[in-house]
Image (cartoon, rainbow, N blue to C red; front, side, top):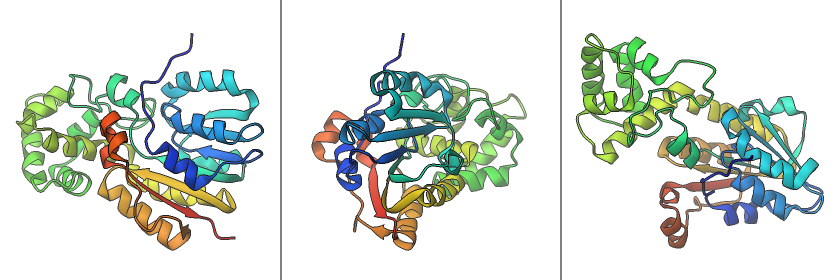
Length: 281
């Protein structure tokens, strides 16, 4: 039995308009997630176009199986980070990167991405490798924790929080999301979202991966191929904006944002920003 993703892909029509998939083309979905963008690309590049999708989170394989069954050889899924796509040995006519977490990861992974439920503080995209968020909070000195909260969460109270964590862990480890919420001392979403964002970025080294990944994906594009990237916070958008401006022919003078209609149907689209550029021959 195959699983169905609850995730709603964002800015799909706008991405299709920028990439303009064609039959016979080969397209990359570098952040497969729930598979919405892959599905849209496959429909648009019918009957002979192909989509290769990658994701570092092997749990999303469950959402790739229905596409494999429906599209056969036209669809391929590989467990891989998008900064490793050179290993595929494929040249693409277009690529999409959606840098946000899918609803499946946020709502059902049990890895502590959200402060709304009491779950283990893991936060790794690839749950088989690397340091968990709990381990990071237990082993990182207060000065580095402050940098993480200030730089990745843009939290001006990062120093105070780092000291509170350093004090608490002398008594008991910070193991769960609710442990962390208790230390923060508020349930205010605007506060908690920045703190959880900062930890997730640090655990997965997201900004370094993004910089490396933009270059790696672009190198795999054919001349004239389009790279479309959706970011969800200012740190990501700044990196994407600079890369598109300096390394590609920009196709978006300003970031494309979701319509009010899309935001009503999918509130997570509110913070999404889409930028795209064409690889110069």
